[in-house]
Image (tube, rainbow, N blue to C red):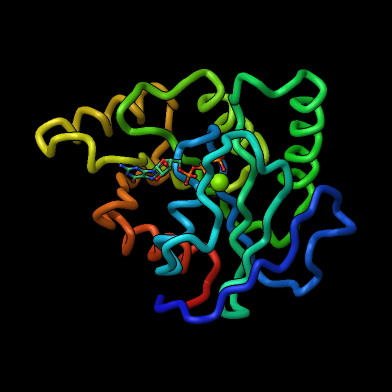
Amino acid sequence: MQVHNVNLTISAVRPEQYPDAKLPEVALAGRSNVGKSSLINTLINRRNYARTSSQPGKTQTLNFYNIEDLLYFVDVPGYGYAKVSQKEREKWARMIETYFSTRQELKGAISLVDARHEPSELDCQMIEFLHYYNIPVLVVGTKIDKIPKSKRNKSESQIRKKLQLTKNDRLILFSAVDKTGKDEVWDWIEDITKVN
Ligand SMILES: Nc1nc2c(ncn2[C@@H]2O[C@H](COP(=O)(O)OP(=O)(O)OP(=O)(O)O)[C@@H](O)[C@H]2O)c(=O)[nH]1
Ligand SMILES: [Mg+2]
């Protein structure tokens, strides 16, 4: 998809604040700093539309990006940032649970993991959570420009194994630097949301 029109429609914490445009939604989740905002920027061909963070753990709202009035990307605040208080964590968990368990417009989730490392326990919990709610999953392994080509297959199988991905879960290795995987990610999104 060639994207020309993007709007940050709303930053929401409660269901009353979600947009009511009835467009399909794709959520992006992953630990803080994994590259969620960078993936959005790459998909929409902007350098810094979705703010990439100099301050990890900062974004604590669901950010809805309206893409061409066809669909929304929902940037989910990152998990696993050490300096976030227990109270903030609980607030985050409630917000996420509410959104993923009730949102009719949600068609699928992109779960990002850093392809350079074995996925963390929190990454595993996120996948379990998405499976539990029967949400179609695309796992994106980020920052693969930092992995030599000869080691990418190994990284892929490590991610599949650790996250216990099923045959219904797609896995795509991605780089916001050299755009590897961008077209495949768009294909999955178009497929899941039935827009193109
Ligand atoms: N080399 C490389 N760096 C990347 C890539 N994607 C993101 N980064 C860098 O990783 C850092 C974090 O990226 P963000 O896109 O802000 O991560 P985020 O998941 O949105 O972070 P939070 O909003 O804090 O949850 C930034 O310094 C990016 O430039 C990539 O594909 N390759
Ligand atoms: Mg971000």
